[in-house]
Figure: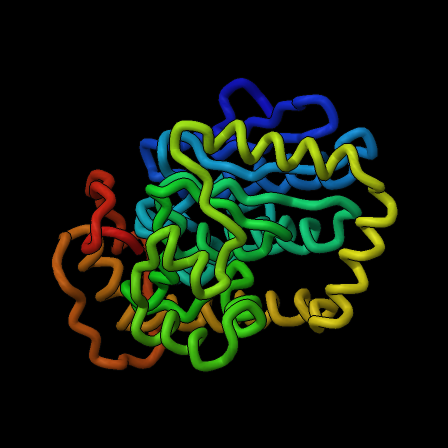
Length: 304
């Protein structure tokens, strides 16, 4: 990645470390960041010298998903044009979301196909797309200050970034429905108790503990572990992931053009409860929805 990119990668022996460093936007992803995230993910997944990968966020935040401020403003024409080709500028929020999700979903697919373990090191909030990215990793470890929240419903969205695929596989149908419909915030210990993550490491040694575990995996029988990972995925039906990711994008892009998401987005920036009316999808000029609201501090009320 370039020196200006918020996506950084480094090597520690045979362990690759991918860091999202966009703390001023709670490590959310706009199109450029999502593009760099995909490039870094593919590089680490396909480098045979890298035998385990840690995915982490900087500054006490894991990731908060797609950048709602960027989406509210309608994106950047030069960035959106990369995937649109000769298509006209986006006419709704859904198309801007889709540009970001195409990159994130491609990265998630690569993580699941990679012949090596990917570990999510969650220190702080993992919400919405960040929640989904963490769940897509092979192993998930948290610090005591980690918080997990599905969160899509807060802004009237349907879920993406693999979250609706992995939740029922990790938790079972009933608990998955609770996280989606009731949207409880789970502490690190609660997430461990229900089986959402593998373990909680002490705050003081968190980074070192995750790195030590990744190094142990990297020193293991890489080919055998890769085959075992593939077999477990076959048993769990993960070969259907790519199909499901496509359905997630289609559903979220459609719902994002509706009145409920417009209200959810407005409430997010106005720091107030949303008043949803179950509105049908509508099309409009995204530019008319743009604004200059500053990022909201992370709290129960402010997450997407």
